[in-house]
Amino acid sequence: MPFDYKKEYKEFYLPPQKPQLLEVPPMNYVAVRGHGDPNAQDGEYQAAIGMLYAVAFTIKMSYKGTHQIPGYFEYVVPPLEGLWWQEGQSRVDYAHKETFSWIAMIRLPEFVTKQEFDWAVAEAAAKKELDLSKVEYFTYDEGLCVQCMHLGNYDTEPATLNAMEQFAAERHYKIDCTSARLHHEIYLSDPRRTAPEKCKTVIREPVCKVE
Image (tube, rainbow, N blue to C red; front, side, top):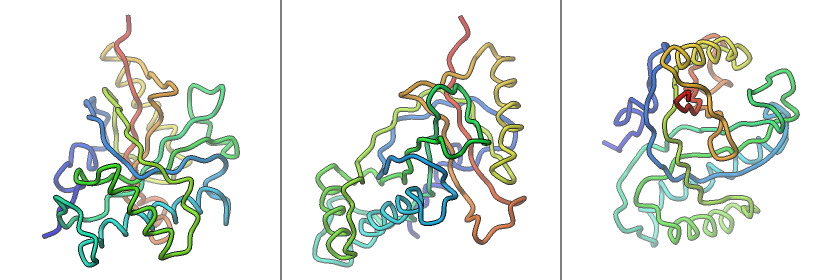
């Protein structure tokens, strides 16, 4: 059976609908940075998603080609994730999505070195005739976070975020979003195929101890 990160690391991908604290170790990703409303048709975000999956599936299917990656094991491509922020805002403002900055990303298996990543980007760019110059090998060290499963439309996330902030405060922690630690979402549902009220999204916010 292919290795499935969601099933093997349930603490990171399948949390309860009640907030919890957890320490998240550094992970490597294929990532694309951008700006603007993610819902804009033919926009920058939609183009970024296409780039991510082109590289992710080139790595996944590499075992069928002539380029053999050392340590390769069969696996399920992990879910799409995103880091989100807005300049001058300490919290995400869903009413002004046009001001979003984001890093769209997909987790890489541990066997993917920077050298193998560069091969995959070049391979995907050549085979699919894509400009993948924006794609990067990104390491994210998240650290201590408050996390919760959000069920429902993305626009209803503020209620979940308020519950997470209250949970953290009751334990003498505060939300600690910085340029290095950002609002984080992991998308477990495809909104094109899932009713909005049934969409599952893991939400993480970095926290620090209140002095």
